[in-house]
Length: 476
Image (cartoon, rainbow, N blue to C red):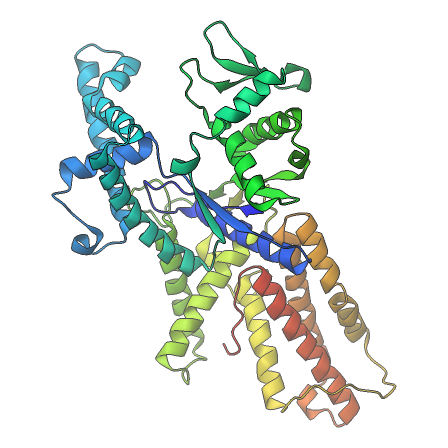
């Protein structure tokens, strides 16, 4: 099982989510290619105080605005009200501070936050009006997410929702108390002592009996295992949660869950942008939809500047810009080891030279063009031919492909495969420039051998890029 994406339903997907989604999808495809049966799941954080903030702001200031009436995606509309809540809340805090309260007091006493907390309580008690508003606004968000996921080319076999899982884990706490793994403090809160494991004491249930994050994660891990009985479960989550997953996996092992040894945290670094590039509507985070749109637009400008697609229909052009833009974005984010923080430069990523998606896409299209011109059909050569050093190197490199898939799958890292595909594309270009023009080769056996080699390169580039979620065009 690969769990990835895990968005909150109070705002649209952002650049960090893009890396998460692309990693989760590609790792799933790599594991499948390496022979595993894979289930892709998405645990949606669809409840809590942050959701109530958007709901309350919409109630107060929207005048009944909907995605249709506003002409924007539902996730963006809900995100807009989350930002409005934040602005109004800050105004209230400033007013209370001027009246003599401390920052902490003002944050707690502001009327808006109290209303949001009351709304959360009403939600937890099943208030029909609050639940109806919650369903409506989450529905808008899911419609918006569906469009973003389609644009990114990612999918899921199953969705889990925190609104169905947040009460889970209390049974696990009882089990842990009975086994002596957990202990109760005087105030009734439940803890586990992990100091002997080099960690600290960890709260697993509050004194009032309410859950903390780890409680529901314990319950959700058990539920996912009960649903699928998987051998391995991979959580694709940013590296700010490294400690949380260490604790989670350790607790499950101490509870005697035999399947806990198959749990992995695929931790990844944040994505930064060069300053001043692509300010999103909030001005703080880069919106995923804006990013995709900008990538496609940049691909269009760069392709048109080269002037090689005059005979393409409008539909072919649009598809090509989409494939180049998305290919550039995906390749740039996946060619770096997941653990590393990376600086994403949209302009650098759409370059038809160097270690980029478009360079590999262009190499594939170039080979397809060569094969078409040569009227190629796959025929095995049987003659004893003398080949060049470059041709031998290329054959050796192509033979590594199955092994490269295994390495990338076992390491949960598309980066090694991405960089291998770059080496293949580079090697083909060297071969293409060093040998005499293939089409003009008079020795029919040698001509066939070189065309066969070229076809194998094209197949490997196409299959390998598909495992990264990237489409390689037939023509560019």
